[in-house]
Amino acid sequence: MLKNIILMELYRALKQKSTWVILVILFITTFTFSFFLLGFNISALFGISQDTMEEAATMDVNAALDKFFKEGGLAQVAAAYERSTNSDSYEEDIEIVGQGMYYDSTACDVFRYNVSTMNELMFLAIFAGLFFGSDYAFGMARNYTLINDKRWKGLAGKAIAMGAYVLIMHIWIWIISAFASTCWAKTFELGITPRFLLYFIASYFLIFAFALIVAAATVICRSRSAGITFGVLFSMGTVSYLVQFADMYLKYKNDNIPQDFSLSHMMITMNLVELRFDSGAWIYTRAFLCAAIYSAAAGFISYLLVKRRDIS
Image 1 (tube, rainbow, N blue to C red):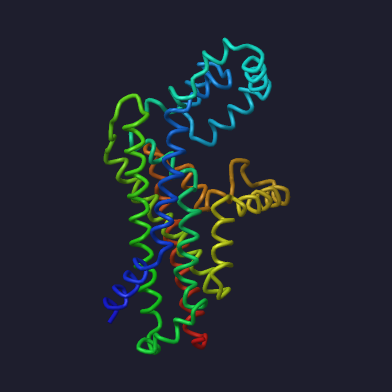
Image 2: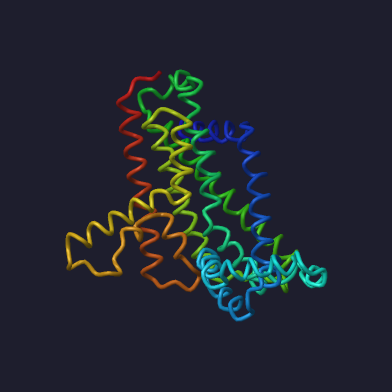
């Protein structure tokens, strides 16, 4: 019976227009951001020094952008703008398409940069909210009379179908990253190594755990819009601000807490940001533990609610 339920949920996912619309929009946004990483000549446009560019190339995307705005300085941007408006000669020298921050990166490197931006999480939040919330929006749960005595099968079928979609989306981002590398990278190189495969698996489980959290929020609220809103805010880092306040409060109340301690290390988003190909064993262990704990908690809470509630 579980096999039939899984096939039913997969078929329903394939028939949803949102399934394909999300993949198309994900292609556009990921491809555009990949151009910004590989082929957008920030150095020439904003007047940032080559030393700053080379140092930024060793950083993650968020840290590199932060460095540009702090050290590159708004003054440099303003000066570049002033030169471009007052002299025609400067306009001829500036070429937007050229060597980006990560011009020398492999396709797998570009994939990691795209994953760390949380773009995938945001679109996955929309899909998860729509997919799990359809029961409440259209009253589809009334049609599941065959599994009323074992409702966990219906929930498990949705979760497995969701896991398949997450895998497709994860592979899709890698394909987009590889395609972007052929267009704008210095040389096209896949860069597939055992470390990349480990990263791919770890990041997949973290993102799948995120999808289950959004599903749990949808089940708790019985609303697609509530689940989508929660997931989008989560992917945008809104929850991390609350975690930062919690860190400050704990360190204020207890002087014995190390300064480098942070609850953010237990967050899915922070693990995705910190996870790299060359990360140590503890970073990967922490990522898998977070994925397992969040997945189990989200699944258990969803199961309890589905089991206790009347079908409506």
